[in-house]
Image (tube, rainbow, N blue to C red):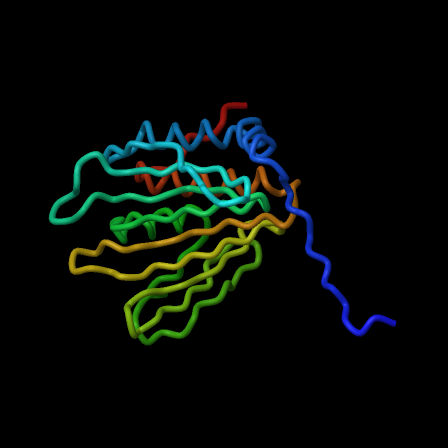
Length: 205
């Protein structure tokens, strides 16, 4: 009998960058991301995000064309890993725009981010609601959400400045390859609100 047991590491959902890129194209994810950049307000410019690691990660980086009042340019990245996890990072993004995008995915309870309040929890299983935890020491907050049965979302904001800009992150994690299209669609909807301030148009039947 062996003295140790080597844990089984699940195989990635996509083993090559072309396979991941093909799925992102086939699901319309790339097109929707670039549509959001094209419609962005304030105007953003995007470029391919080159990942120099060994994993076949795909993504883009975006930058605000003109710095908004009193601050550096908003910038950030969108990247998708071989496990289908899509992460959006934004730096010096207006905090109100980030909250608006979070509301596109699920309910934010009133006063949930007020310092001193306990973590909020969903109250209606039929309505996705963010469970949020404010952090008093640096005025940041973290949260998680189950927008569908097979996708989970996590967010973190930190480093709020005097005019309300934040550094923030959102991660959408599908439970399986079959759930990737749903997870990416939700993430793209979030990014569209983040970039434009409005939800994406509903697809025509």
